[in-house]
Length: 242
Image (cartoon, rainbow, N blue to C red; front, side, top):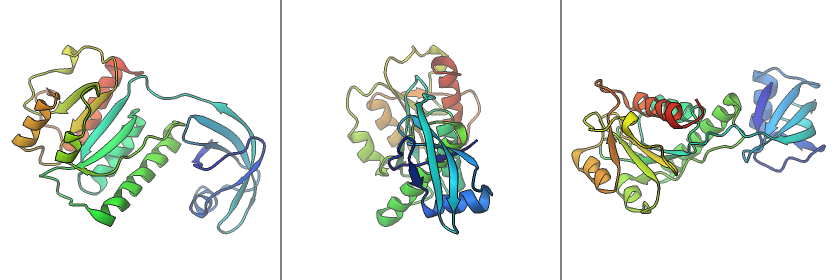
């Protein structure tokens, strides 16, 4: 069943129109036509059965048949704080993190980030990553769309953390903690992953000073996208719904 994220109001047993980009995807990529069934979801936990009743070159009309609340969210709430990596690496990290149940993504600019973003470019990249999140939710069945937070400088993000923000984990090849020694978190988890070159010694020390536990994922050094996703898999296996 094709799933489409529809962020607007979806009327029970009413009619709605897809945005032009979504309509193009449905008609020209998926090759669906009048009578095809689609599942809409509102990003807040509810999904809707719908059928295509008409289409044009850049438009698709849907008749909504009914709704239901379907919760596919993990009981483990993880915010992934990812130092921006280059191009497809960042897209891959965001996409797979959503599939693995992450609750939010916070991109940060650290000293060794290969890509430098600011101003309008930063706003556009965050919007792009939010699109990656929405598409991942369409694919994996999530009805709640995690937010991609505003891109922040690493120091500014670290400085605004509240004291009671749950477990804090820093991915560090030289870390002295292993995940199996952690206690089950009682609240949310903040998972911090550095860029391709890793965090600097100062950045890592500042994170430890802010209460982050340095986690080592085995004896091998993992790439930035591999490290974040490996940690999420392990956390979901130990404490989540895997």
